[in-house]
Image 1 (cartoon, rainbow, N blue to C red):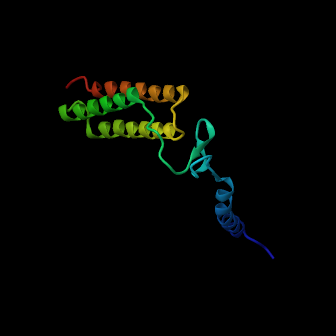
Image 2: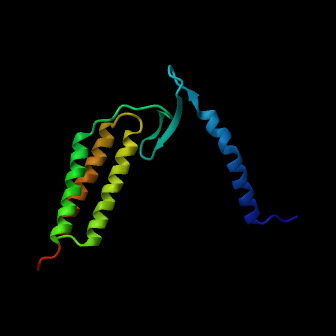
Image 3: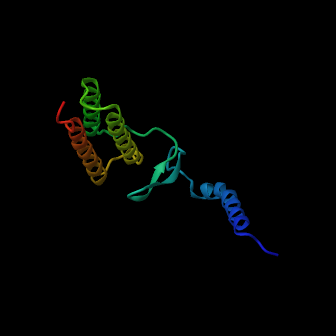
Amino acid sequence: MTISFKTMVLSAAAAAVMTLPMVGAAEAKPGARDGRQIIMVSKPWFGHQRVAARGHWRRVATPVINNRIARQSRRIRNGRRTGRLTRFEALRLNGRLVAIRSVLKMARIDGRVSQRERGRILGMLDTNSRRIVRMANNRRGS
């Protein structure tokens, strides 16, 4: 009896899907006092960390990052309104801001933003700021 590669891959995928609910249940553990479940969350650049699955986290204060994101968004909006940025340039720059916001959200997921995470986000904001200046000034004749 010959089994094709496609059949073998599909059966392995089906077996993996069947075991997923069991793996998730094995990793969840009750919390210390309030009964919340603790799960493992993987941050792409820092590995696994323990995080509460349910419940309210305290707001992680990042006023410097929040203000820089707001200022860059305002600069993009003003550049588009005055004609210094094209529609596609503004879309690209706003897309970068969305990516920065998502990295900030991932950094906040464990209840604190470490110095390493903060430095990475600030570096991304520096790069985006330079891109805004470069794109706003790339048409010398106008």
